[in-house]
Image (tube, rainbow, N blue to C red; front, side, top):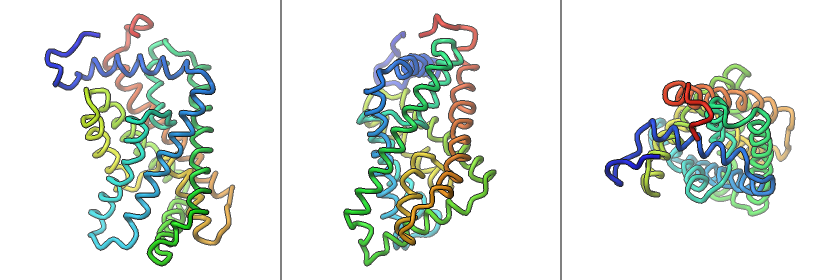
Amino acid sequence: MDPTSNPLDAYAPAQMARLVNGVGIRKATLPVLQLWMLGLLAGAFIAFGAMLFTLVMTGSSADFGVARWIGGMAFSTGLILVIVGGAELFTGNNLIAMAWANGNVTTAQLLRSWGLVYAANLIGALGSVALVWYSGTLELGGGAVARTAAAIASAKLELGFVEAFVRGILCNTLVCLAVWLCFSAHDVSGKILSILFPISAFVALGFEHSVANMYLIPIGMLAGDGQFDLLAFAGNLVPVTLGNIVGGSGFVAIVYWIIYLRGKGEAMQ
């Protein structure tokens, strides 16, 4: 790839597309153990962001929109850990669809990557649920954090299939745009700034992120009545996950593939 004229300049979108395509090829061919471990980390990292979001939203005296935006900034911690620390997140990995569309990744490789990472994200998030539950930190603020966690989960579980699906589309459009913007940056500070605004936007607007919900719904259920309802959990996770795939793969990866890489085929790696 040709360097930018100035090393301090952001990479141009056409250069970003080539970077995303090359990274997609590497991600799709990672060894199973490495992919699994990185997926576990991502599930835990997003859970850390969700934990901080829950705390920040507890007892906030800010106006409704401002409070949600501040909570979104707090939640951004999770994706910062994923991108800068290094981990494999299902929602961000929807960008592998660009390499798939370009003929560099097979359907089997794409589904293998998504499936392993999704399962690992789930285990990482549920492990975080167990650790938080037994840590007692839900009792911070005289149990106010637990009440906030329960309210967050309840609101998510009240969504109908179509609402959850569309909110999933909108969410992962912003998440994958945040990851896309990270490819324009040359340094860590640039990557962090690329993450903060799209991620805080999706949280403030109430969109639905499948991996975040892998933590937020179970911990909220436990904080509420102490019971875990698998069917209710799946009832949210299925439409949100499908929406995330449409938003990230369709509205970001495929759109940018059409704009910058279509017709270049397997030579573009």
